[in-house]
Amino acid sequence: MFEELMQLDKEVFLFLNNLGSPEWDAFWMFLTNKWSAIPLYVFLLILLYKHFGTKKLLFVVITVILLITATDQLSNFFKYGIQRLRPCYDPEVSHMVRLVKDHCGGRFGYFSAHAANTTALALFFTILFKPYYKFFGIFLIVWAIFVSYSRIYIGVHFPLDVLSGIAIGLLFGWLFAKLYIFAIYKYRI
Image (cartoon, rainbow, N blue to C red):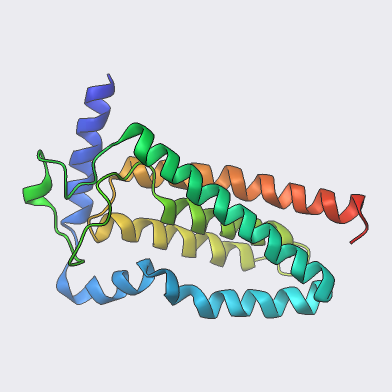
């Protein structure tokens, strides 16, 4: 059963990865680049300041730092603990991968830190801004899905790596949002 799932994951990866074309490569490379989201983060900081003020803004920043640290380090723990090869290192599929980048990254890819981090941030801010902006969360979740898919498109993660990262991101985004809200009310920040 497990081997069939891994084989299906590789087949789905090859199908999705090979849908790519040179015309779209720059778009997906832009999305997958962590620095391309800086304008979004600046915009979120402005909104936070507008609705929460300086004290809560600083508390959100600290919470976000802890959130990203938690998802990122858990990803590293799983990558080195499970040691699932990235597609470009997997001898079964490496010769068929459409690798858009000049390098693949580390040898191991389970689970995608990009998917976990962006999904965690998207859900965290969706929950925080829900009282103020009804549909803003949809934009953030779509952004996280696009960033997550970009990892398959550029050839560095299998779909299960990405889906697992999304699941971890949803869990941690929800958990840290609830912890933030709890702390705000408990300590009257």
